[in-house]
Image (cartoon, rainbow, N blue to C red):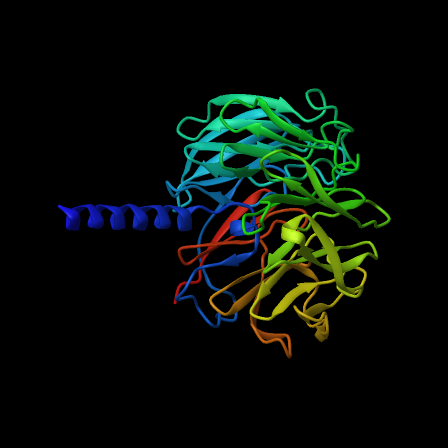
Length: 404
């Protein structure tokens, strides 16, 4: 009997781990590091095999999310209305649902990526609508608005945030004076706590969760500060002034072993903070002003961080501990970055998808190909799932086979 119980427990753990690996949210788990193995180490001249593409998403820059049921979710705007799309992994459109008006003031379209959790889907529109859907039929379970419900104000290029789920809480950043950052009940939308923070506006950043501190906390970048908040109570633990000329901080902070790397464009650059006193405060470790990523993000792999600048239009490798620049290279136009299986995947704003060997000493370009399908800016971050590379380019989603 004891042997059977142990076996059942082991099976349960395996199932839970398998489901966790199947879920893809913003930048996989917000780090940009995908756990895929067995991927191609080089590509043909014209790029990897094109599996399928879907045209007709409308305008937008959001990325693919994938649930434990292996369904793909994406958003797009048509005629001023936002839609959520559901696909299977073969590119078949399974469902589509309108959820309300979307951002059409500048660089039109959807922004934040869908978050999936336990049979529900969550998104935040460019106009501040927080929407919870039933995954099975896309019926709307609840809906709140950052501005009318939580005294926030919209920002120059529209809210761009992917909801963070921590336990029963959904974390979002309205940017209000009272409701600066909020935790809502993920099942009902009811307010659990609000944090006044520093009273900053939202700054296009998706928050992260740190569970390894004495005080588990949510961290985000608001318009003028990087902020840490007690996830249980909503109490502000610390803040660090972080200002650039347009109050734009879209990149998710990168965290490892008490070290928190935050990067922004528009001349700001990057700062490394160290969490101290059990996460109740921070201290500055170093700055790297040249690495000033605007929307491309940074990934950490091994002892180094990689990413591209903005005003400094190079790709960088830096020593994680010291901030020393190991290389700067402009072989490829700047863009966004993810990693998997020992390789960097760099998607240039000029439309080139590049495969780069992870090497802290040089930008080791292996292959690249142009993404010609789709429209508008090449801003959506790529996604890797079970040997398939998904690239969203405006109104088109493209799937490539990158399995070895």
